[in-house]
Image (cartoon, rainbow, N blue to C red; front, side, top):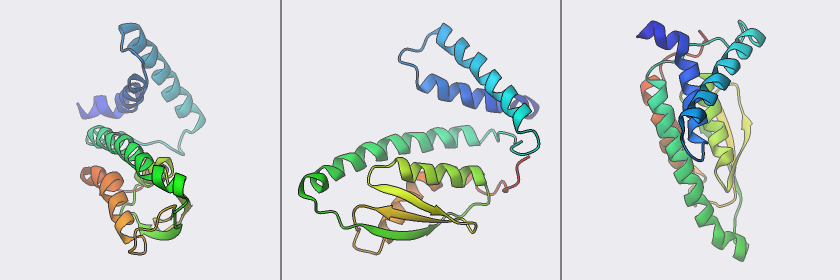
Length: 170
C-alpha cells in the first residue's frame, strides 16, 4: 500500500481536488481529472526533477480535506463578519506575527495561502523562521493573539498528524 501511495498519491490528491471543482460528478469528469492529474504529475516530475520531489504521506490526504473544509467555512464566516465593517467603515487594521510550528514547507505554504484567501486577512510576509506576518482589517483587541489562535486552530491543527514528517522533500 505504501509503495502504491508513494507512486500514485499525488495523482490521487490532484484528482480529488479536481473532483471538488466539478459541477456534477460523472464518470467522464473523473476520467478527465485522472488524465489531467497524470499529465500534471508527469510534467511536474520532468520540469522540477530533484527540486520539488516528495511523496504524499497517506495521512496527509484526510488532513488536507479537513483543512479545505475549514477554509471554506472560515471564508464564508469571515465574509459575513465583514459586512458591517464594509458598510460602517469601522475596521481597525492590525498587523501581527504568528509562528507556524512545522518544518514542512508545503504545510507552511497552505497556511499562508489560507490566511490570504480568508476575507479580511492577508499574509504580508512569510519569514525563513516559519513566522507569518498577517494583516487583518479588524483588530481583535488582543494584539492579534485571538485571531492568531483561530488561524492556528483552523489551518495548522488539521495537519497535526503529519506536522513532524520533516521539511525535506523526498
